[in-house]
Length: 106
Image (cartoon, rainbow, N blue to C red; front, side, top):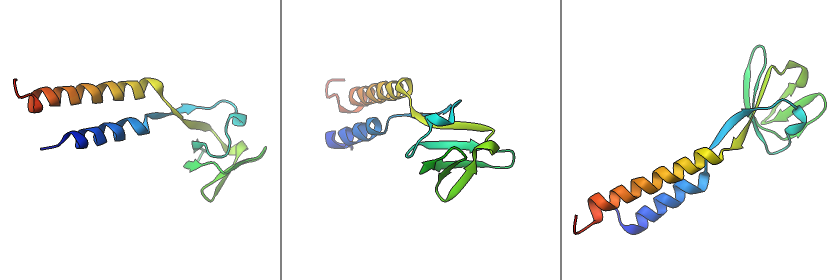
């Protein structure tokens, strides 16, 4: 049976990561080193961690994509709504688990 420490560890892991989603980027100037992006060109799709952005290209993970070739650009961003939903679902799941399996009176 899972102990209290196991449940606490599970809860901590579930809440630490948070939830992210890809959001469209209109202006390339919003992208900078350290950002995670998905770039779609006419022929390919790239997911990369940005190392450098110049006026001519976005570079990262050994790939350089010319800005003029970019058809869509999306950036991974933290989602407050998804994170709150995940935290709420985790809390309710642990509460239900506690009621069903740990409650000596129930």
